[in-house]
Image (cartoon, rainbow, N blue to C red):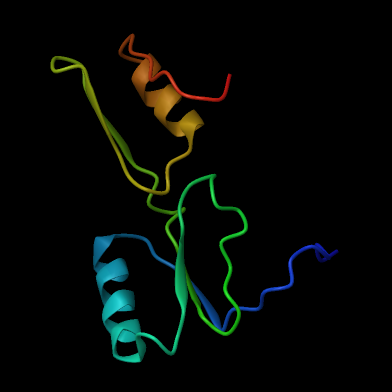
Length: 101
């Protein structure tokens, strides 16, 4: 069943798998700047990231998480969810405080 609250109808949704895909998509859209709207769908936020007659660049497949336990740093790709981050960080005894309170 279609969500009746969603009224936008994009021309295309591009599900990118990596940086090269993002670059190729932006290069393809760039000549139409100002005439062809686009938006970025990243991770769990922006669930309503849609545009009428435009392009949606969906980053959700770019959900990699790299942990450096010695530097206590986490590098997160734009499509990752907090659960992805927690899963990888907790394996090294790290926690990424986030959320709404």
